[in-house]
Length: 111
Image (tube, rainbow, N blue to C red):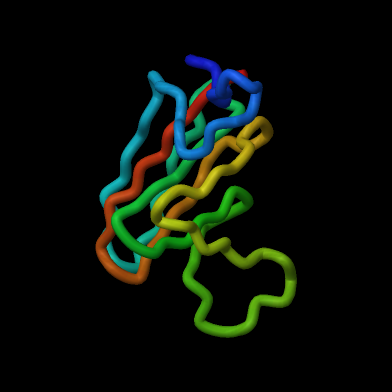
C-alpha cells in the first residue's frame, strides 16, 4: 500500500490541497437509507472519504442518519462530501449511509 505523505514547498511548508497517489480506492453506490460497509484494507493507516453529496459514517457500528437525539456516544458523524480524513489503524470497517442515493469513495494509504 502506498504511503501517505504531505507535499512541501521549497521552504518546507505543507502545500494544502494535494493528496498523494493511492493504490487502494474503494467505492460504494448507496441506496437511500441503506448502510453499507467499506472494508479497511490490511496495512491502511489513513483514509479520505468523498461523496457526491451529504453522507454519514461510523467506524464503530452501522452508520445511521439521526432521527432523534443520540446521547450515548454512538451517533454517526456527518461526512464532508469534498473529503473527510480519518485514521483507520484500528478500524476494520467504515459504515456509510445517506438520506438519498449517493456514490461514495474511500481512498487509503499506509504509513
